[in-house]
Length: 363
Image 1 (tube, one colour):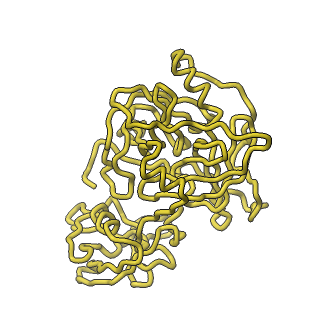
Image 2 (spheres, one colour):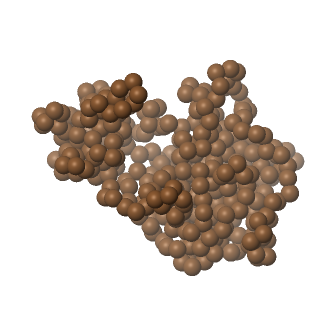
Image 3 (cartoon, helix red, strand yellow):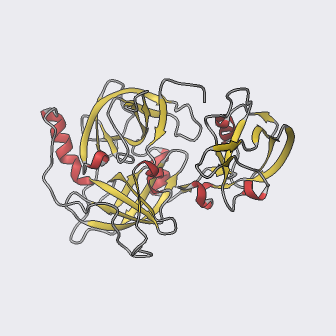
């Protein structure tokens, strides 16, 4: 990726994660806790919300939830946001909120918690759905998805869990449609907004002035001071192919070889290619003998890893071009990686696997 005044950063669990203590890991238990248990509460509204926006927020908040994730193997846990899309407990969220977990639960405004399972996802689009247990004595409140694409200039309202808040509003304006992230591992064709979102809001709803959902929070752009410059959401339309596939339970993963790239050195300073920072354990790349960079005990870089220069004969000048070329293929395809090691040109044939099958890439 070429230098930019903005730095796109996914609101991944690593940015809002907790490392659980060694004691009493809840292996296999149906319920767990990564933060203070939410209590039933009245809406806490900022003074700047207008009457119409306050009405949308008040009506939508009960259908929005906190999503908690736990991986007992790594002891990593984290939180994001989601929202019910039907009365039977189907929750829509961002895929990166749940991609690294094995146990999940959702917490509602009423203070209740429910175990959940991931039933469908589209990793490329960064969306997923979870199914929770039906509410005793009745269904869950849910948010309607918009039947049409939104319009630039519309006011938008997000509800999320960032900054230690619990299901609080963030408002802004829809600035653009079909935004391109500038990185192949981010979702493309997103909604661009001015809403001041941050980690913990991932997976939350973006609501139009009528209270219909037009998007799912995915990533942000930071300015040079680390402040949110723009926010981005995956567009959703009721009856569209993305939502229809999720409701059918389809799971669409992205193909990977198991490489972690050094985005600082790739394509920079005369290094014409993608520098491999690390190789995931038990991955096709590891079996092919590819090597990552080395570091000393203080985690300082001591030597660069292999440099990928082509995929199936196509020249790749940085990490983004390598990822783009790999994602044009399918899981199960075999690709030929051209790379250099200590100035020597080499090749390796690698069979692509789904990202979810490589645990080191899920953290």
